[in-house]
Image (cartoon, rainbow, N blue to C red; front, side, top):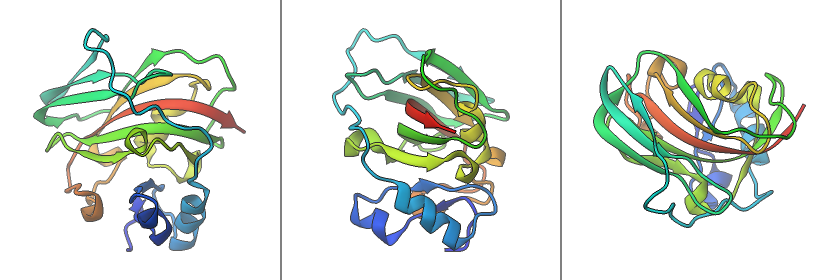
Length: 193
């Protein structure tokens, strides 16, 4: 596939079809290298959050998203009033971390869930796979990268990313059409500079 943003690799397809969020302008070889780094370092919790868990509300130019951030014991819950669309990045720290700071050049270990704002459907979910992924920040789409830079290991982050900072031309293999905004709930497990 020739899009510069997300690539579904054969190795990833064999391991529950993970969509690696590769960066703008990455070549197939760069994406393959990033994909080969996606592996289990720490398990992601897969249990549902409690019914009384606090949600963060993100408001779009259309729709909204309610996000219960992940914890050490539970996966996130993202509920979208579709179509949800944002025209700028919205990122909130749901839980501050205390570990190493994430920089533009960090390699991070993450648990994350991604939801399409247009459909409200999950398009990638490390929590459901119960497997974290290791990714180099330079290889991530701009909005995802911007939501993480400055965070510390141990943080939980909620982000709404406009299409211009994610997949402006869409990503059919992930069900993402041109113009789709994305919602992410992310746990930063580790950061190495």
